[in-house]
Length: 528
Ligand SMILES: [Zn+2]
Image 1 (cartoon, helix red, strand yellow):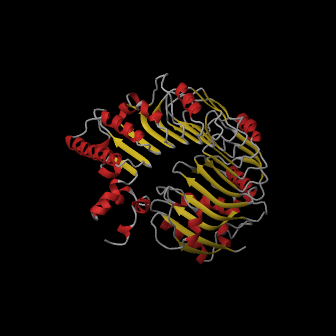
Image 2 (cartoon, rainbow, N blue to C red):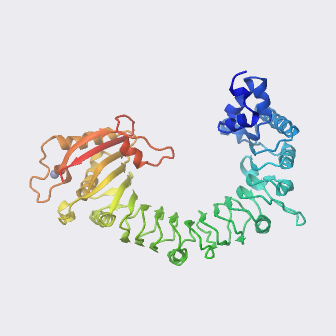
């Protein structure tokens, strides 16, 4: 026997807990010893998608093929055997995770049995998800057995795609519950209140895309630290949280007609606030923010009603305003702000007091770019002490008016920006952007310019490099010279995007290689 196999089961289980489920299962073929180790492994993870390797078309069809049903039955038999074998040893289960995509609820009696077994076994963490095709998922979801509410030892309960109902006489015994995460779950206000009342240890509640809730009330949870609710399905009238320990509150409703009354005034310990939806108004922000004396992070996004953001706070360190299409005006008096991210389609008129703040700014340009636009942008950028990142998205429909540089000139030195990203539409010829670059580079001097375009970036590079290498005659008869005369050199590099598709500006500046198609990094040296 090898050295590792001689380790006690507990040590081997601990080692296995760092591996993905697939690799854990593979160890069973090593030897009889490992098979036994696996039988008693206290983390039972049955994620159908991972194991079956099925395409989503095959999985999410009401008319599932016989082949699919056979595979599913085989998988469910495997789950069945594994659960019963584990429970036979009478060890307690650390974690039970199940995610199944079923064509219908024909086999749901298995699920009821498993829930019962897992709860009896004293599982600490339960993560249970059932996905059904189309209308079944929302109209006739799987009904969770009452037994789940009697799980005394469960500390983390995550449910997905089910309906939870409970007899009035049933006594909820989730006494150890610390984290409750419900996603696409049907339930009502009364049950939520009952859960809250019976689970005094709850620290974290997450309600994502649940429906059936009208008046959400969470009171008197003395340990509650985090509460999040977001939905595009339900239309709650109010969300009311009263918990002095609450540190993080996230409330997001993306349907425009949904405007619940949101009340978190009593949560004086709030450090992080995320709001999104039509219920977010200028008045709400003005009223709410000053109430939280320890608030450090504020994020508002997708708030179509918001026209002006006026924030005054001594403690605020991080601020994000994104995709609020009607914002025209921002007034920020936050002397201790360290980072601010602003994403929008309009350059806002602004009053800013944030001397140590690092800014990341993104504009999606749907409008006409005329002299007024450049002037507003120039004014806006001049108010930001340290702009680390400016990203401009230009669309095919963006109209670029021709510019007279004399109109832009006010003798102020150009503004140095660490990173400028241009996302351009490759269908437009490069000369369409010549005016745009004239305007943008007239008052901003990027150290790094990143061009994102599907396949035309090579032409941009040639365009830019061309200017730095030859004598220019473009401004011979002008008083005000264009940016090309100050450009000493353009060096080429490349960068990689981060996994979520956002540009990671830290990685951008650290990578300096010439390769990736579609993304080009130009290091620009300017005559200052
Ligand atoms: Zn020129």
